[in-house]
Amino acid sequence: MISLKDQCVMVTGSSRGIGAAIVKHLSQREVRVAVTYSSSKKEAQEIFQELDGSGHLLLELDVTKPESITKAFDQFMAHFGTLSALVNNAGITKDTLLLRMKNEDFDSVLKTNLYGSFYCSKEAAKYMIKNRKGNIINISSVVAQIGNPGQANYVASKAAIEGLTRSMANELSGRNIQVNAIAPGFIQTEMTKQLNPKQMEAITSKIPLKKLGTPQDVAETVAFLLSSEYITGQVIAVNGGLAM
Ligand code: NDP
Image: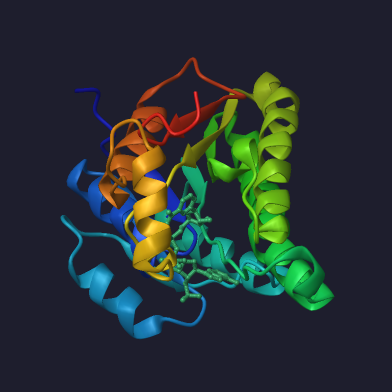
């Protein structure tokens, strides 16, 4: 197994779900991580306590607020002195059918998922360009590829994240910075708990591997990308075969 020891990684939205699994898994691989939250401070503190090893950091970071991002990255650099990777994981859904979707619900999903990834990547790239090394991993979704009724805002945000990934990968490649996306399928988290049993059954029956994924499946893919020096501009699907 390739060592990730002493990489220093910022993971947005790591107070629960996939983000929490990422920080926990990376800490087991001797990575030093920043656990971040925007409102779930108590949950983030609990995740922080569960990390392996020492020297990690707990930070408040609201990805919709550039001043919060600047402050969090300043604190990160003061603590670790370097930034190996950023995982843009923070995300929200506000699902409803198109004609019922309020403009503000479209805006807020784009603002968190897409703008948040852009703002954080820009901040991270400042440090990585100086360092001539870095890794940015954006968390997209299978729905960027297949669409999903009732999720026009979310699907638009994730499809845009994949375009952003390719553009940033091209632009930053000359500075030895890799930029990739991971597109999970349906993963067991709070986000998918909102689905009713009928919806859940319909989804599972369409997945070739006949089961939902786990946050650990995504976390291990993040670790894989952090171990690679020759993958950039890609979208890695972790979806049980849901989209091929
Ligand atoms: P959860 O709802 O379980 O967790 C979302 C995380 O995002 C929380 O830690 C939350 O922290 C944080 N967050 C929300 N708004 C903000 C904000 N403005 N600033 C900073 N952090 C914020 O989601 P999942 O773990 O399920 O999803 C994580 C990522 O994976 C998302 O990008 C999602 O779109 C993607 N994904 C999930 C899938 C799934 O099936 N679950 C499938 C495909 C993709 P806080 O409460 O502190 O705000």
